[in-house]
Length: 392
Ligand SMILES: Cc1ncc(COP(=O)(O)O)c(C=O)c1O
Image 1 (spheres, rainbow, N blue to C red):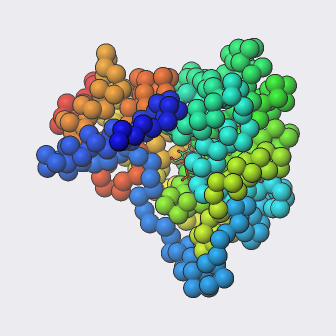
Image 2 (cartoon, rainbow, N blue to C red):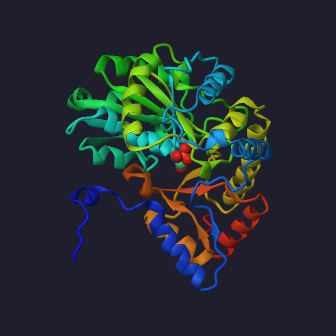
Image 3 (tube, rainbow, N blue to C red):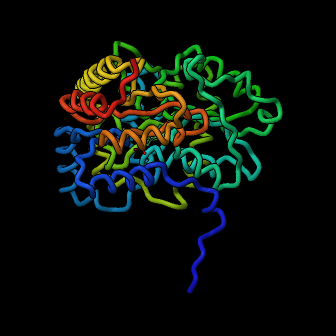
């Protein structure tokens, strides 16, 4: 039998890391000890206090039942507490928090909850690639908002054409940004809110890196902006900043109406997060932020070693203010980001991510992750130097 996939699958991009993984495997098969600075997966384990909370909860058989899709009340209260403590934002745990099986799921399902076929969704370019499938699968259209270095990687709202504004139903934003590592200042959010109101566009700020911040910087919550709750939501996750990517636990916070639409999709296709995992996330959100602060210091030290080393090789890298990525121009003239990344893998045995994988405006850049131990970065620099990636 010749089984055909649905037509709509053809509209989906190849998952960026499938290609990179295949190339990496090919190098490893040749015996190369590849250093993987590709995917943004926290390398250190989940802290013990969080694991202990999970263990205790798993022993309680009341936690073995189907979990509510909304998230346990205790979880939603912990999220509200976290927003108050970190951003001084008041959140009603009952109506303004929705638990999610990862923020990827939230941003993927949101277009399904809000958009009709033909509606437009505004997304940054370059961006986290998981924004696109949900839009495509519900028949909506993508409009890219270029993130340019000369604009500090902030979208230019004035550049969005009138006809697109009229058809746009949803805008996705992401700060600190993957892959650009840019911060989203309150002054930018203060432009977004009236823009969204005027054009009746729902805003979703995806903020999973909000505490992976360096040099005393701060990423404000979108919900700190006056009027933000009238126009949108913020999605936040324990994956990145509490080293819990595999646990699949996140939350959407903000406009109750938007959350009820998203919740309707979620409840129809899924259940909630396993309750012991929610207890673990409660321990994360209500504990001290020492672990997160220490991790940020760790990424910052790695960033300094990497950026200073690359600059010694003439790469002209700007140190990122946040996230665990360095986003930098391809240092070589006349080569695409894809070919450059392939060269780096072949000649130096290092995986870096070509910017084109994140969108057209990512071309000309590469993303290098800060997710291996500090001692590995001098070897990265050494390998690059020996392989001839020197530009001075
Ligand atoms: C911008 C952005 N949003 C969301 C996610 C997904 O995070 P989660 O583990 O919460 O699904 C990622 C992960 O790479 C990301 O970079």
